[in-house]
Image 1 (cartoon, helix red, strand yellow):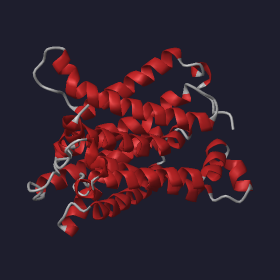
Image 2 (cartoon, rainbow, N blue to C red):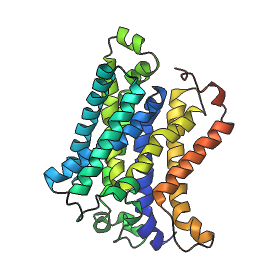
Image 3 (cartoon, rainbow, N blue to C red):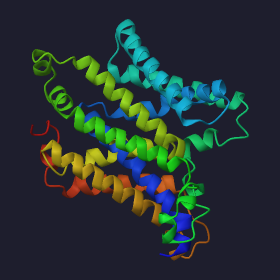
Length: 308
């Protein structure tokens, strides 16, 4: 792995790994709360917020987009509650109606907006932009110690690194209320915890992770990483602490192996063109979950909550 690897592959792999970790950390609590589809919903509902953020700011500034995405997440939560209460239908149906309607609205906004000058279109929203995030100024591993070269890193890398660190801090700082409210909401309320606020905060943090990852890797990886690594980790252990560690390990494995397989796998098999990195990373994550479902030690007890 020489200068070519550093220039062409190092930044995309790091971005993929950090995006996977940022999504997997809140995904653990969403899976345990039986709200795994919220990750799917969030990855869809943030689209109109991202487009509105771009239209209002006129740039692809991540902070404007994050503010728009967070606003979309809030609107989605309110919309789901309104549909559930007014329509008296089950939460899953309300969620499905809300996120498909908002994603369709986002697609319409994209098609009617002048986004041709930036990487913001339907294909970008689905597959991301991972392969193009190369480090042009890199001249080998020594560039990691060169401030001038480091200043030319793709902006998506420091951005997703900050968000991944934010997810880690959120998980560590709010570990106890998240854990108690996830396993026993009634007990958490007896202890004086505002479980609705905790759940809302978790959704907002998941939305932040989704939009940061969405910008670089697209909705396919976001959906896969919210669900597959935490679900596979749940099959490996009954302890939450171990589950979180397993989910991070599975997320890193899926991102690295998926990116390498997408870029080099077809060439090793005699094909001329690489395949989508986002699609391959999501495929590897799905294979990890399938293997865990067949052979993981805790798969028979995964239908109940983990040990506290």
